[in-house]
Image 1 (cartoon, rainbow, N blue to C red):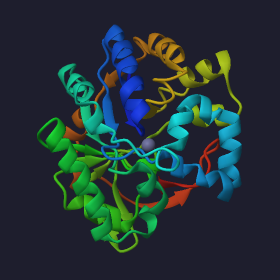
Image 2: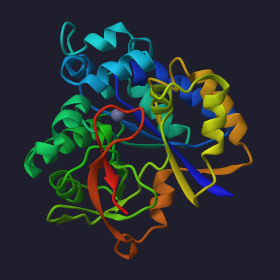
Image 3: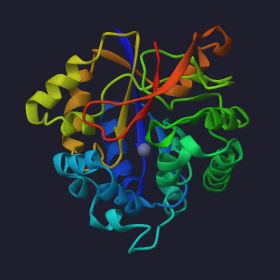
Image 4: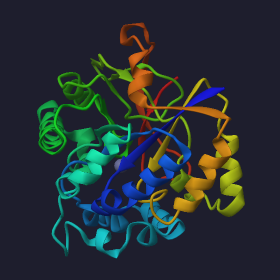
Length: 296
Ligand SMILES: [Zn+2]
């Protein structure tokens, strides 16, 4: 039986306020522990709307995956017509509950939109500032430091890897790939283990026009090809309109996989013994733009 990590990314105010409690309830019902990564700072989702006008792929994704339905109209305006609300500081009880129920809580950046759109050109110091802000909020809201960091939008660069190496993290999960490795980008060779997302996300499958029972079958059948699979789940999608789908998926996976948290997987890895792989920008079917990928 293979291991499966549910890596749950929380990008927005609505995702933490509404999506996470729904996901916690479903996970509890199935007795599953997962790893959550929260964008700790402001919700500037409205700024991502700018991509509508600058990238053709984004418009297509919006239409196909019905992003306004997924994210809600308020979220679509945060940081533009509406002020950007603070994500982590608005829901301290939800974050404490996540930890109290045995899940892992890590960081998904400070400002998701800023990192997603800019990290490839940020300096090490600028990336470090984003990471430090997120760590500060984490310490203020729940105390302590997280073990894991998941890059917003699977975007990482030599500068961001160097900045992460300076932090308190034990691992990161910032790319798409097939197995744990140590990442190299340009002249930078990362010190920490990178545990990549191995499976397509539900929103990518929706973006390819897959839906209904076919979506469920495709998800269920995609497991089991590796010793370890990492599925990225979005609080705004599987914790939003697709929550019943998510619950059915968990039901179907019972007995087929062993659910684990990333921090526990990372604890068994020796970073120095991992293969070093190049990180390159690549595309994924159903997703607009590029993501950082493990080159094999
Ligand atoms: Zn994200």
